[in-house]
View 1 (cartoon, rainbow, N blue to C red):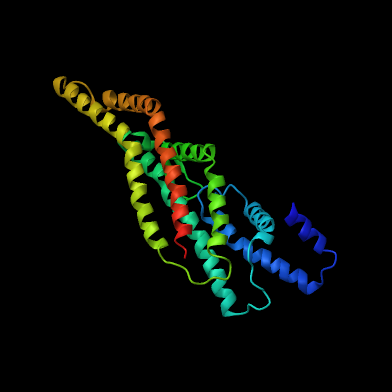
View 2: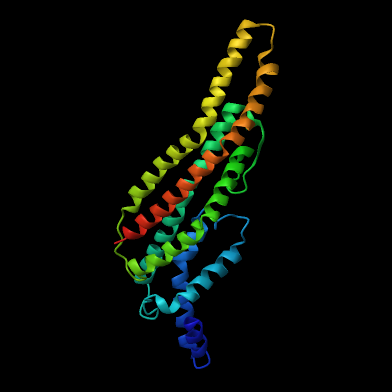
Length: 270
């Protein structure tokens, strides 16, 4: 409220040059948050209009306007302003891409489960990537988002981004490139969590295929596709129901790891 009052009380006596400086400062403050919204897996979905993301970015920058050290816009011109904008974009996009890489574990697990159970035939066009993906990947992706929201992961992520203004204020161009290593580590954890999610189902389907192979070997008259394919899909749905708690636990751990990576990214900026 103090920020709102100070900002609104100063509006009637502002000159045009002062108003331009305030608008420029708000725009500079919103770059880091806005780029994070564009690159993150939840806030950057195409179903959320771009205008809504811009309004949210400016609203957050308006709330932190008096709590962030903002350089004088009028003194910045040319190359210094361009370098500051580039650093702000780098921080926001890197933070969002870290979440995107880790969240891709659910899509990876869904594709591998669908390929091993025959559910890959049920596919649809992913509006985010524009490619055809199995329905199971979309279900696990939505499950991951629900777990992330239920654990207040979105609030923690936004709080980490706001804390980054205190660690690396606007105008600082000396940035640590340790974020590259974090991106590589996030890629490794994506495959790790993808394997943990799909491992119970893939092992169960493999054992079922061994049993079906033994049955068809002992009774050659049975058709493998007409006999084994329906049983495999039914058993896959049963395993998904049984392993729902395990999958949710892995998604919870993945949420904690994603927030921890954001903390490590922000702490390693300097």
